[in-house]
Image (cartoon, rainbow, N blue to C red; front, side, top):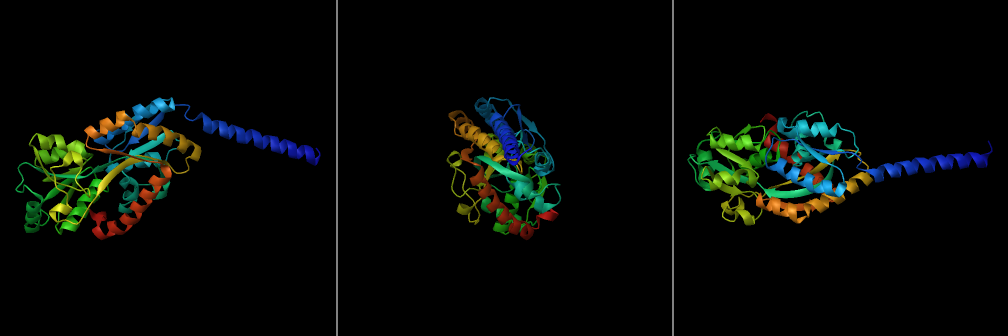
Length: 321
């Protein structure tokens, strides 16, 4: 074979390979997509299912939502981190399962094993107390906790979750000592507060507010920088003298190495879903704000959060809680 013919054959082979690769990317998705929610059924689960329902119409394939809860969300996160990076297995969660959990122990995945795909929503943390607790306001809670160090118990969806960290940060900022009890999701933590097994519960308003309106829980504060419109009667931490403002976001993640073309396809569908009137109406009812960010921008947010928690977690000694 002469050189000219050899180069022709090699060039043709490369063209076929590149064409096949392009066709593969263009064909995505060619089968159902799975969204893993690493928490028990609840507000986050319902949000993921609504997004799956809307996004599937744009992608032309079914999207199945699976709950793989436990260990503060790390079971589900590990499953996605170890999945094939082909866009068919996504994680829907708060970034804490990536930014915090690997700092707390050994969840069998590293921060770099997952990549941000898209942000969907933001929500303020809401702090509520059982109706029978001896404090009716945040100042009263702080005074009681100072007089009774470690006796006030707060429940969260699990160790290392955004809610757990928010509770620890609140206690640190308020100069009090609280005892943390992790549950397998926010719904069980709410149930614990209702039953008197925990004095406080922190989490998404959508999962707590119904019990507040029923008089079974008492709203003490919201953690956002300003009052959310849907929680206009609940003061912020800063308004009550605690110098702290936090809010949780929820978004999609995938195994590191997912091809850019596939990420772009998912981004386009999720962007349309998050910005749809249907999703906006759904999350507003749940006291959540839609807040789409594409992959590159969301990754910057997650990286910044990781940098903060890498300093904060050791300071709060969360490893032992």
